[in-house]
Image (tube, rainbow over all chains, first blue to last red; front, top):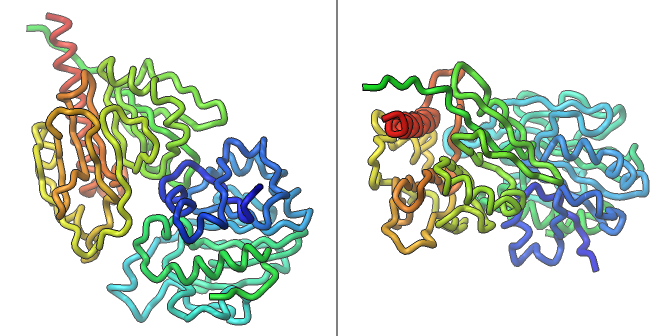
Length: 206
Length: 218
């Protein structure tokens, strides 16, 4: 029997360590990117694509993901997707400021969050953001902006125009949780996991 | 005395499609880089390769599939550079051990054995601190699965190996870091310490190849 959340796996150690962590092992199932052709994604309540994914391989399986979405699936994309993986989207590189918390604690990289969003509304402000890997300079028409950067650029957004829900953010919660260098990240990842497990339908429970 | 002119170094790197790899290993004058793109049927040819680089963020499911080929490559004198945490068993003679719970504020590095002079003119503090924050470079540690002395290049605050330079236990060369990234990073701003260490390692391989060529010409 499948676990509720498929975690697209690029063979990277931090992704593996995350999925093996005792608190998340029940929720996440690794889906090796090069085995995707043999996998029926419709069995997953949610599919999560972490930072450090294989852009070319993702693009090769684009139709499979769009079909999953068309059937009402929940797809979360984290990190950089430079190849415009989804229609009408464009990602661009920006400086990754991962030392702000020590050197500029009054200037977080994410300065605006839609507090009415079911994932973020129940998180403390400190737990909503950390560094991010680039920004989206284009998102699909009508998509909802959820978070913006210090430079007022889009970090997090979502849309249901492909059928199910797409939630995209240039943050990297899965990989960072695997590395364990951001000690407060458990709050975010637990809330995200609850939300994704519920298919993005229900409020997060922290 | 025979004059030997070394040909350009042939460096192949594992490309698992993560953003930024091509920038870290872009072809300039030398060395000549070849990406080995990971696919469903990953089956790279290493016969015309001097150095195999496994960058930070690599695919260790794919590497496990070619473990025998990598072992043959090193046994035939090839140089393997792995700058990542290999959680599958494919690096000959060594395992990487994850340790994400070590307090990064306490991480310091000390130089161990450096017979090739890799850290000459390099400030070790650049590997310990980034903008005053320690523990940013390596993750986990390296253990030997062979019974010979551990050729530790760098060790951490707990005397664990975080970098290994091994020309003793293998006919080839192993340069391993415990997920400490190295490559042509930041060259557009001039070579920083990460790029310097990486270039020093490539220079050491060139010297090895030149010495081997001299022996074969003699």
